[in-house]
Amino acid sequence: MARLNSFFLPPEAWPGQPGETVRLDGGEAHHIHTVLRSRVGDEVRLFDGDGHEGAFRILALRKNRAELEALRLDEHTAPASGVTLAIGWGKSKRRPYLFEKAVELKALGLAFWTASRSQGEVPDDAKESWRDKCVQAAKQCGNPFLPRLALLPGGIPELLAFAAGFDRCYLAWEAAEATAPLTPGHLAGCRSLVVIGPEGGLEPDEARALIDGGFAPMTLGDSILRWETAATYCLSLGFFAGQDIK
Amino acid sequence: MARLNSFFLPPEAWPGQPGETVRLDGGEAHHIHTVLRSRVGDEVRLFDGDGHEGAFRILALRKNRAELEALRLDEHTAPASGVTLAIGWGKSKRRPYLFEKAVELKALGLAFWTASRSQGEVPDDAKESWRDKCVQAAKQCGNPFLPRLALLPGGIPELLAFAAGFDRCYLAWEAAEATAPLTPGHLAGCRSLVVIGPEGGLEPDEARALIDGGFAPMTLGDSILRWETAATYCLSLGFFAGQDIK
Image 1 (cartoon, rainbow over the protein chains, first blue to last red):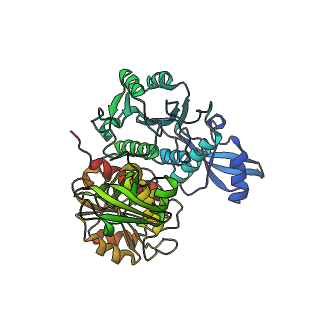
Image 2 (image 1 turned 135 degrees about the horizontal axis):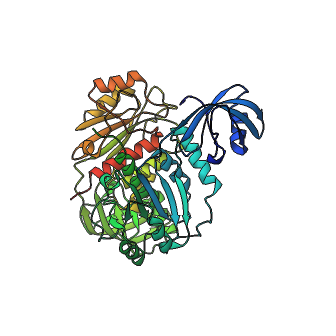
Image 3 (image 1 turned 90 degrees about the horizontal axis):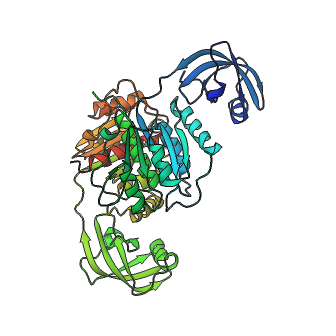
């Protein structure tokens, strides 16, 4: 189905079987109608970012609404391993870029936590624009899974509670105490969580609390990486760890 | 010297020994004078992007010119291994980002070549703005080496000639024939060249010519990466390959 134009249908609206009718609203309806000039009868690909995708036929088109019939439905098995990043919140123009890279490099999740040196406040909910960025990237690269987005305004205690859901937890730390480089092996075959500090870095007591809470401190290497480079680097190691190396 | 403000002095102007006087012009002079409000007598760090750095004292300051005296001079050994990327030219707003990541992840070089699907023309010379981007990134991350920038408007023949300067040459290819994933091991302990297609990918005959010319075809994995994600991914594997893993 790679060549069909792709549209996002939220998981809660995903049909149970072929023959059922679904509806696209808002931006996706606008996109199918105006941008791509689709027509009634055209076949398109829908996906829900949760492993479902399918071929659908357009039954009706209006400016802000499209009705489609499910023709063929596929379900991908949820990945059993992968990387989730928990990044110290900051006021960054570079955040949109991260969503895109996370989808392309198949991150399982992205979380933002409130660090001592965070600038601005972690919002209560993931912004609509974040999911949109992920959806656009998923259309381009074909990843049927969108990363799970989480917000942890409660700082270290909430981050520690969040960590309970992972097989292995790492702290990317630039202090001299962190001498072991993070490797693909650390991220292979498990659901891992990698914590990255905000721009400006972690406070020593934050790092200590995470290490005491079971996070393994790791260096990302002998360079001073911007937060989004650090994030993309970890995602790259995680993506590599997921490849089938003979 | 990490805490001193950093300024770029081109290699051809680098002093031979402490006590010599150097001059900053243009943007760097503006930056030292106006943006950072330095004063005569202040100590700053200069670097030439070719492994030299040093502590200098400001002797005189004008709006577009600063004179400085070398106090202490250091020279870093040029890295014996690392990655150079040769990327198919395109009209991309994302190019500035790549320069930054290349410096942070210690790429040895970046080249742009004219591919069949390239949009726009490879310029004759590296743009001033490219070096500026690299310089800004080097100030931030402390890398004393800037990646060497090369332009290969002559397409595949010029790319093949360029490849003669490297120990190992790889072609990142998304075709089904490329089944071996590129690994950090491929990039370790050597000067490697990795060719990445333009947005839109390589034509089969381009890939064939490179493979016939000695390039090993490698997959970057089971995702469709944008060109700059592919580039950052390769740089990440190369940077990881350069770390000292115990």
